[in-house]
Image (cartoon, rainbow, N blue to C red; front, side):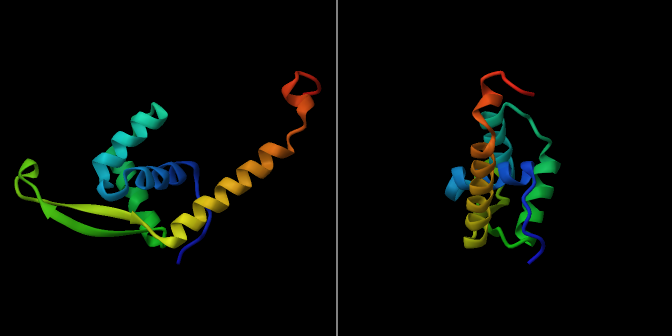
Length: 112
């Protein structure tokens, strides 16, 4: 398994796969990212990250059934693995720890 660090976009893509559950494919992930973040990432960027997350062992993919809307072509679906869930949990815990470490005075307009 390649490195365990999650970049911001990797984390957002992994979360989108989790949100989409059984219907996580490239276009759906792209649309979910737009809904959740207001960003409109290029589909090539989304596919590149999906492949990278699969290489890291955070996702697994399989071919779904053929659909009429795709001219009978099958689509590649993604599911989060246990390692992917652990990576997200670790990322969330780290972010929460750091947010909690920011002194209240910073938020109140004091120093800084």
